[in-house]
Length: 459
Image (cartoon, rainbow, N blue to C red; front, side, top):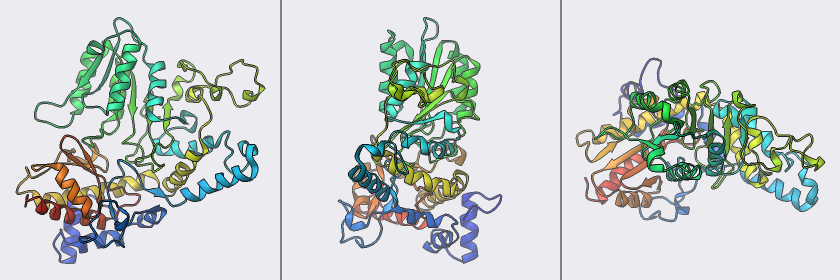
């Protein structure tokens, strides 16, 4: 079910409610939307935990046989149904063929990740040769910054958001120190205006214009992990490059969540993890992107065997024939057991397509926002959404702030079979993922939230 042509999510929900002669907050509206959801079958491609299997669910409050309300895909995506099958195939191959598994079977271990990089490229809007699946996100970020961060006395700053994810912050800080500069003067942190939670695009672009001659790298999130804000990556890339800066993004919360066009936007480099919206499991194989325009002018600072051209890699002559672009950044062969769940998930993305997923996401998150406003608009201080209200400036996540202790609310939600994510100091992150979440999940969450607030004495 997509928003009716020309209508917002709010208008769509209210028109359906009027058609059904029901309150817009009725479960019947959620059922109607689910019945007409062209992607609803994708939920069966994932394993949704049962209420009874959640460690903190109170079975006196919920039916343990029912599927939980899983809204934590921004932290850890659900397991793809085929992941276990693919893992067992490789374990079986190892048991039966031993060393021959390096070159044999449907996913030879020596280049298994290469076989699915085209699928990953489709998700991030890149050419297959611009994408490498390797390492973890922070390792890839360090490798990329070693090559793209080339500080000089005049141009030595890295621009990032003030409350960047800690790993990004630490990586940038350590890269600056590694080059002999002081983070106090070289780490340019961009904060929202006083009293605001998110950055205005205009303020980002003005900062780049003002400080650009001293900025070596613009390094922002694609989607900000705490607020859920989707940055205008195309505009930021254009502005940064106009001032002579390299522009890169941590797309951990963007990949698989929003439509990306890293190649068309001219982004210089990007990296991401795969265990959130891409559902590859905890610590899953991460990704890196380097635009093809840098194939010849940007070289890796650190070399490894897997950066060598595959055609001559096994000649063992110790004469490096570096692969162009991001492939040259490869250091060693990747664990096939991490390739398996990632393949299982990417196959579902291929089946669905990012445009269709994004269309559903706009309505699904819009429905969540509508229900929260419906129930709590008379007292916005009790439940406040700090994620941008403009759907073009967010992914599927809404970040909620409360007038009561968020830890207590989170505990009460967990008792009611809700899996969502709390982040200090005061935010509950709720992410209805279009691959596997339903409109019924959203309605059930809002009902559970009301019950949790009552249990906390907030209603």
